[in-house]
Amino acid sequence: MNDELDDPVSSELTDDETALLNEMPELAGLGLTRRTFLAGSLGVFALELLATEEALAALALPPDAATATKAGGNVVKVAFKVNGAARTLELDSRISLLDTLRERLELTGSKKGCDQGQCGACTVIVDGRRVLSCLTLAATVEGKEVTTVEGLAKNDQLHPMQAAFIKYDAFQCGYCTPGQICSAVALLDEARRGDVSHVTEDVSVTTTRLTDDQIRERMSGNICRCGAYPGIVAAIQEVHSGRQTQHTWHFADEEQLARVRKEDGIETV
Image (tube, rainbow, N blue to C red; front, side, top):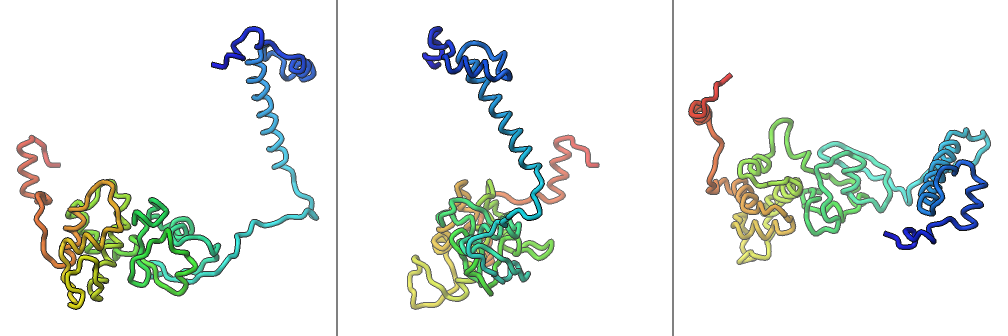
């Protein structure tokens, strides 16, 4: 509590405040203490300010009034493909690819996590290679092809990587998942091109066979705060090698579901 306001002496109105109270009848009834005077007068002032702003906004501009349109700084025209569709946009030269995808094209699958290129949630694929869209200027993708997580599935058919992520429960909250999946898809293309990683034992030997350690290293730029890394590695390994990684659960078939319903006394509709 403010000791000055609680003091019965200092809580009395000053001469100036008393004069203002007498000059402004709309302040009548606020009380004779400084606390009620200040609180009430601020409320009256705010209401008057809002009324003034509404009145000014309702005024019609004269025909010869000088007006100015809001223009972006250094607007450039950028033509590129997004998920197979040709797009041409007029953009501020400083806007990031991530903000362009989310705010202009309404492709909100790519997530803004750290916005500093550290978490990988914004990863998309540009001409077959992974990029961090939060650090990529939209103007630099002129003439290129951008693939986001929305462009991986074909109609109702999931991309094999998407299906594998579901199968191995390779996500929890799901915020990082679009970036994880885009990174994983591009990772396999990198391996097919023979790109090496920091844990490749012999860089002179071209191999497309990735170990789990190589997958972990290649995916190290994508952070999962939920800790779903074992499922992520297992999903990528199965899509990459066709080898099913051991896991402790599977989807129940119809026979198992019927048995469970019977045991629990659930009637099938």
